[in-house]
Amino acid sequence: MLLNQIEEAVEFIRSKHYVKPDAGIILGTGLGGLVNDIHITTTISYKDIPHFPVSTVESHEGKLIMGKLGGKEVIVMQGRFHYYEGYTMQQITFPVRVMHGLGIDKIFISNAAGGLNPNQKVSDLMILNDHINLLPEHPLRGKNEASLGPRFPDMSKAYDAEFIQLAKNIASKNSIRIHEGVYAAVQGPTLETKAEYKYISIIGADAVGMSTIPECIVARHMDMRVFAISVITDLGVEGSIKETSLEDVIQAASIAEPNLTLIIKELIALTC
Image (cartoon, rainbow, N blue to C red; front, top):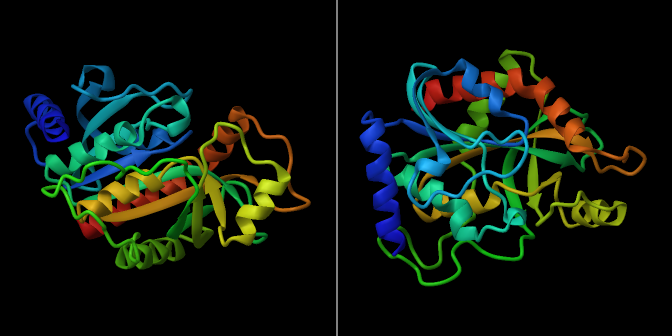
């Protein structure tokens, strides 16, 4: 069933856009503006793609954008899906399966996250070098499709070391304040309590959010190379915690967006 659904979605997208993409990009909350740097050739609404979920969160446009970024052919998800929206993990990660079916072997993921490291400031960027999965369901639960990947995929190198180093070099060259650390994912949609922030920090996370890990797991299941980066949109550090709204998150993300766009654009130009 899954393989048939992937094939149907792939065939539909290819009927609208026949150019083989070099990379896939998933844009997080408040980070849809990267598409302004893309020379767009095709736009498809999620609701028109067979078996695709539909974004329900404000600031997630729900469009698949195709075109050139940094001279490379890209497919961009302008809006992603979350477990708290009521979707299964298989639905959330279905677009990653489709990207792989279109020939993509590199994926670049962004998200908005709460910072847990005292060195972080709002609107800083953090490159993910590892993660802690606190979500209540796993995207590989159920029958394994051997043609997509192994039953027990290794996750010791979840995020590509070469991509991480190149991104750090790009940030340094452009005087962009950057961090590197561990990302934890929780179910949401509530933001964390003070005690939860403390707990997640104690177990080893530098930032916490509600996405990215399912997409990373499924990408690695199919041996795709993964780069992920968080925009720190609020702080979960004792003494810096304050009430945070979606509007606050979007505003913080918009401040960081030019730097995020520059890093992803140059990284894709170097690696694809």
